[in-house]
View 1 (cartoon, rainbow, N blue to C red):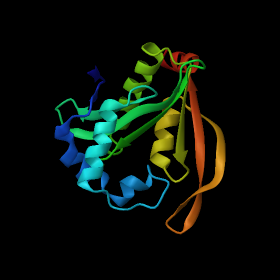
View 2: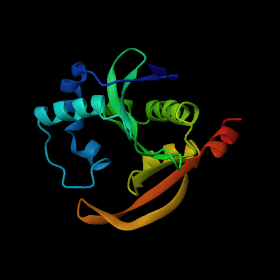
View 3: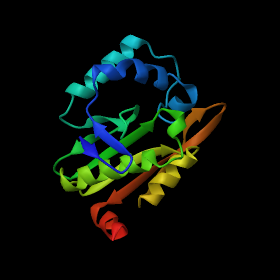
Length: 179
């Protein structure tokens, strides 16, 4: 529905359940997304998640990300939408590892950011990222996000504590960066 240079953001469909279930059940992938204990996700849980993505639109929305060739590779969306204050949080997951580091996530983020600023009239976009997600942090900085603060030692992963970074992007900043 919303097209970038490499990806399309569209609604989740039932056809995505099997592939999403297989791809999201990867420890490394989930370690960037889930602050809790990473346990296997059942097919039924994936079905419920996708149904939630399709139905819960009041404070946010989750898009499926597919390549221009039609292959499902992940998801992104916004949540915690504050209509009065005009801000929201965003998140992304490229879950097919063969697309990591190839610009698909950056392109999906550009499409999502443009949608939020130009269709929802958002003033400020926020995100949280774990300090060990170096690839994600580099992507966000490239798009113009700046560090707002840290929740120190917020995440316990693989035997160590890690910070959770809060980053933000204002519409004016983004438009200046694009120029």
